[in-house]
Image 1 (cartoon, rainbow, N blue to C red):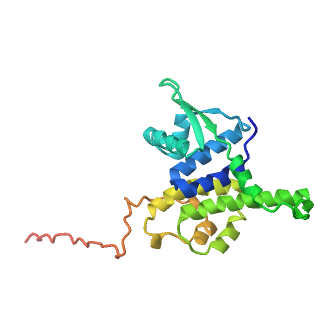
Image 2: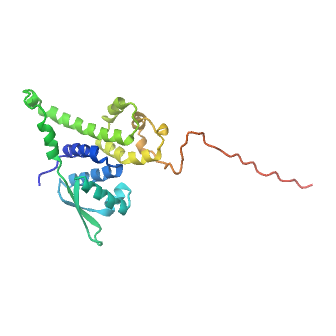
Image 3: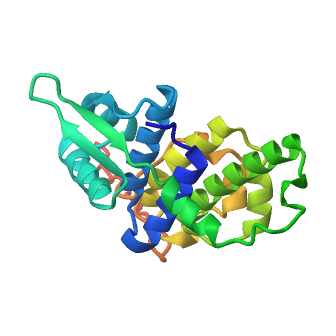
Length: 226
């Protein structure tokens, strides 16, 4: 089986997202499996422990089962569940490059300047596309459409490791701030590196449009002895 192409896989994922409207956890499971496959030099199919996946995504086993079925139904992966002793799964990442090639075939490839770019420019172009793909994921997950251009400019200064860490943290942060009024603007979140902050769940810190109510408790006066 030929090696997969990360950019083509992610482009194919977002095309399918328009149809299936993947959840944050579905996105992260697919991204995690793609990362593991890449780390194994695109070994496909490959084996991965359920415990590792659940720990990496902070999910339960029933949730993992549900997510795997959703990705399989969307044509992104195939899998064979292990037995009760091994508690592992054999995953196959479906090659989405054919879908990508369909889009490329619709482009005008007769421009004589198309192949005139030096190799270094092509490499830089690929890196930029990769960052833009990751930013689009961040922008959709963050779901507070404010200051996209400056946020993208800041995003492009981050390392790939920082980008992936942010993408993993964002669903938890968004869940902790259901009211967008209290969610930081994207640029502020990136500039101040808030992905490194502790996340306080909304259940522990309910957000309302009203100011918090504080009850002043005055100790009972004790009668002094005569």
